[in-house]
Amino acid sequence: MTENLNPFAIAQTQLDQAAELLQLDPDMHAFLREPMREFHFSIPVRMDDGSTRTFRGFRVQYNDARGPAKGGLRFHPSETIDTVRALAAWMTWKTSVVDIPLGGGKGGVICDPRELSRNELERLSRGYMRSIARYVGLTKDVPAPDVYTTPQIMAWMMDEYEMLVGHREPGVITGKPLDLGGSASRGDATARGAIYTTREAAKVLNLDMRGKRAAIQGYGNAGSFAHKLAEELLGMKVVAISDSRGGILNWDGLNAADTMKHKASTGAVSDFPGAEAISNEALLELDVMVLFPSALENVITGKNANQIRANIVAELANGPTTPEADTILFENGVYVIPDFLCNAGGVTVSYFEMVQNAYQYYWTQQLVHERLDLKMTTAFSAVHEMAVSKGVHNRLAAYLVAVERVARAVRWRGWV
Ligand code: GLU
Image (cartoon, rainbow, N blue to C red; front, side, top):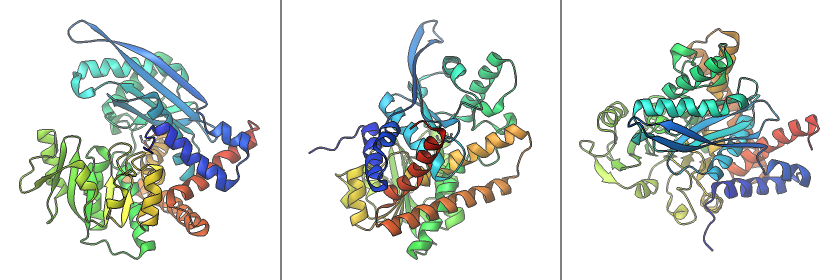
């Protein structure tokens, strides 16, 4: 049978497995299987040539029992409502597993931002915010950056919102530039959180990471900072990196500062001096200690899971591994740090940003790092202990921890 790669079907399957183990009440299970609210809208955008193009936008508030919905916005040509639903569900489990008082949401626009001019991108961003303004806000739902959205886009959206409501409310959106109420270290927070959990995984596995090899698939915000921090904080040697156009390999190691400069000037990692070309698929199967899938969904599936040779798969992307692959990796002894635990550093610092915005007093970078480390390390231990005590793989363990907390909040509210 071919695997079902619909991300929302995958998210529901994962929940079903957790519900069974938790012996979750069937009514609660049914409630948690579906998003609470969805918004679908058209965004007409005046293009530079005078024509009008209509883009489709979505925002899904999956569950807000534990607090306002929270989650990023993706601008991607192959965005679908089911992908946004899955990502919103994963945000619900993500905010729960790191125990921050927020729910889960996600948004998306079907577009290719690389084909838009800066002015078109600004009009699209402002149009998106106008479409959802009445449904978001500090106490309702707080968007943030994700694939192909940036601090500049967050700034335009915040400005649009504040102009509409007539007062300052920077906490309506996170991942803002520092000048507009962003938090110290929000930029590298997703990667930093993943590096902290990787450090903890190495401890429980008794692995010495210094000088060992790592590979990174995807070189956006998460992947590129993971490269820098794997060098700086773990002392690892990153031998392969890739982006949507292909990858590069050098067994002697690739220097983060140099490859980041190369990508910034050429727009891609390929053709980096001294490195050979490697495909995105081949990169996943390299003999490395840590593999960081940092791009999109469904890259480790039933087809290639047996070829994964890494000791640790640290999932910086959302949804990179399918349920079938999870079973294979678990049987093969590959230690997976599941996405909604591994990449929760981004939303954790987003939460810190909201807190700082609310009391208008800003933390030092050192304080952000300390508090992020504590959150990630505590969540990692809870998941690891659950996995060991129940004899299940880490993703299922993370679900057990997260779903139980959300279900408790739903129960206290009397919704189910
Ligand atoms: N987009 C990021 C994620 O998938 C961050 C979300 C946020 O900061 O709200 O976790």
